[in-house]
Amino acid sequence: MKYSLRTKLSLSYISVVLISVLMISVITNLLLDKHFKDYIIENQERKNKEIVSQINQQYKTGGEWDTEAIGNICINALEQGMIIKLVDSSEKIIWDAKFHDNALCEQMLAHIAKNMSSRYPNWEGRYVENIYPITNKLSEVGKVVIGYYGPYYFNDSDLEFINTINRLLMGVGAFSLILSFLFGSVMAKRLSTPISRVIATAQMISKGYFDGRITEPSSTKETTQLTETINNLAETLENQEVLRKRLTADVAHELRTPLATLQSHMEAMIDGIWKPDTERLKSCHEEIMRINRLVGDLEKLAKYESENLILTKTSFDISELIRHIIQNFENDFANKDIDVKFIGEKEIVTADKDKISQVIINLLSNAQKYTPQGGVVEVIVKGADDVTEITVKDTGKGIPPEDLPHIFERFYRADKSRNRLTGGAGIGLTITKAIIDAHKGKIQVKSKVDEGTEFIISLPKQLG
Image (cartoon, rainbow, N blue to C red; front, top):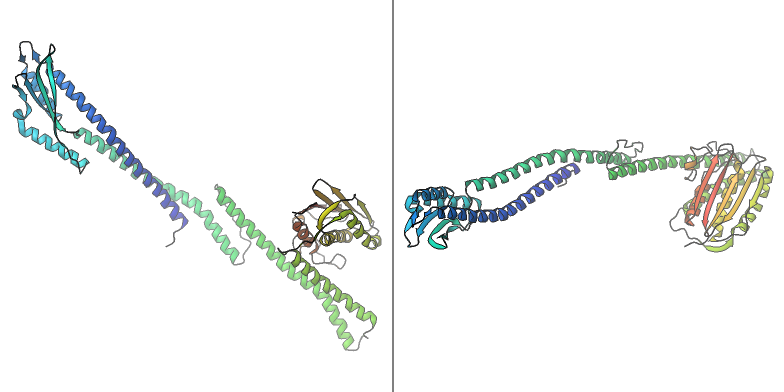
């Protein structure tokens, strides 16, 4: 059978209180028994000596005893559970409580035995006697025999004290139980309610509703972390769903135009409206190449995002590599009258040369696309002890602040116009980041609208 967290927390509070009160009661009774037993024994011995001292004072010079005073002392002792017998030096009985009232003595012993049995069911007590000498001028003139239920006994007051302690413990236990139930219920509700909301949100996420968020604050650190994690999960899934839909729209958009063009050209040639000359076939070939580029980008993305990406590492001068790539872009930059500058010295790194080339090509291609005529593109290489920093900086139109956190996401495009000049499915930067991550490096972007964009790559010189 499964129980709710609230029920378990409430039961745990109650269990802890019950165990604590039970342990306190047991320990208290054990300590009480030990110390109270020692106290009773010491107190009994003290009372015995007091009685002997009082009786000793009743001996008169000449061998006379004050029997009336002795009787009062012994009757008072009888009321406290002690049976007194006084004999003189010749064994003559001066006072004997059993002779005075034997029935009362037996009744008293039976009552004490009952008290002790009520406290200790297996109690094995018995009647014991202690003998004390009575002296006068260093001579023994008699002896006092003090009998009681031993080895120790509890009178009515002692037993009532112990029972009061136990009743107090029971009262504290009952009060603690009620308090723990109330406190446990409140705490369990405070702990379980946010978790219940998390469960409800997670269930909505599992059904495809990603817009739900948990807004109620919690003072519990773990609960706060849990709610933040679920909210982040919902936000991530929501973004992924948006990206998925955008992917569908992107692919459909990118394929629709070349396919529509191909279809119209082919139909025109089939119907005899157009002749299949070189110019018509070249136009169809261009559209086919556009489709191929899109499919190739998708294949690259799948490859670079794979966990099993294999790097073919070699040591090479990255400055030389970048200069070569810039030369390949010279015509493209010259056509837009863009000034390309390279700043850097020889810098040897150990990395996958082909994949790093892909990164530089992607960044230069973006810089060429988004930098207006007459702009400037700078590529800077700086080396440190264990890191090489590559910066690609342009004076283009920049990236809006709201788009900056998303530019490395798949199929995300800050440019929503999707025209032929800046076209593409938004895969290039995703591929770039995947390659840099595979090299254990970092890529950052800084941008201001209408001022330009700066991509900064930190690449380890030696891969582990």
